[in-house]
Structure formats: C-alpha cells, structure tokens
Image 1: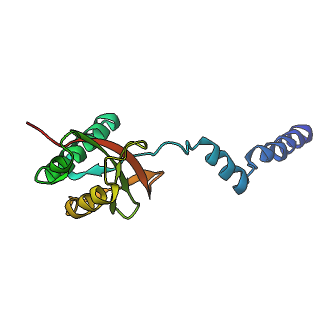
Image 2: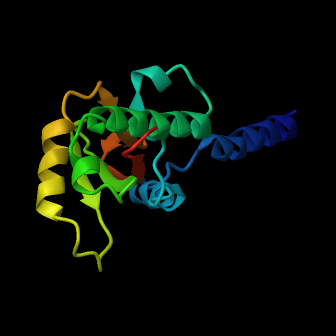
Image 3: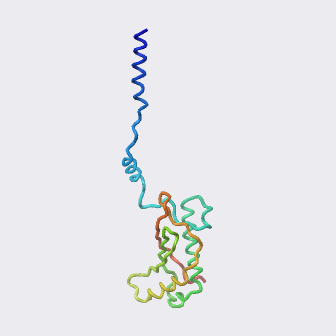
Length: 158
C-alpha cells in the first residue's frame, strides 16, 4: 500500500509540470505578427457610401474607382479644360485619400508635353473638385491610412 501511495504521489508531482505553461515573449509575438502583415497592401480600400453594401473586396474596389471617375467627370463636364485643350479627351488625375478622409487631386500630364499649362489645369481641378461625398479612407489592420491612385477621366463625353 505504501508503494502504491508513493507511486501515486510521484505521478501527482510529475503531472503538475504539464500544467506549467510558458508565457510567450511579448517582443517575439510582436515580431511574428509584423512578419505576417503585408505592408504593400491595405486591408480595405477607400470606399464611398454607395459602395458600402458590396461585400466582395474586389467588387467594392471597382465600385469605388468607377464612382470616383464618374464624380470627377461630372464635376468637370461644365469646365473649360475641354475648351482649352480640345485634343485632350482624357486626363489622368492622381487622387490622394488621406487618413482623415480629405482628398487631394493632381493632374498627371505627359512629361514631354509642353502644350498643357499644368498650373491652369491644376487650378481648375482644385476649383471644381470640391464637395465630394464622404469617403472612408483605406485601412491597414483597422487603422486609417493614406492611399493614392491614378484615375483616367474622360473629359468630352458625346
């Protein structure tokens, strides 16, 4: 009986070591998580209210780009860019969506082109491209981040 009690006590003491769990190191966990994050891609792209009902990430992104191009096109329809430069039917506009949901627009004209007045086009864009609907900025791991993209905007729709 003493041998059984001794054996039972020995098993009881040895089994307690199985419950002793190692707590992972905080820095080690952080490094592991940072390696998992793809820093070149956002978790969610910028979005407009009209695109929020779409759940598929790719379709939501396409909805945002087409809606932004349409909104910019509508705001520039009554503009003088098409009159100043009748040969330009499309303009590339670099859109920056900041983390605080503000927008910035810059014309992207060919580098070798001297026939366009960049300052004039830029001032027209700044004057016309105001009062956009609320835009949710892109997010990276739940944190709003700045994003940039270039949209082709058709100037003369006939």
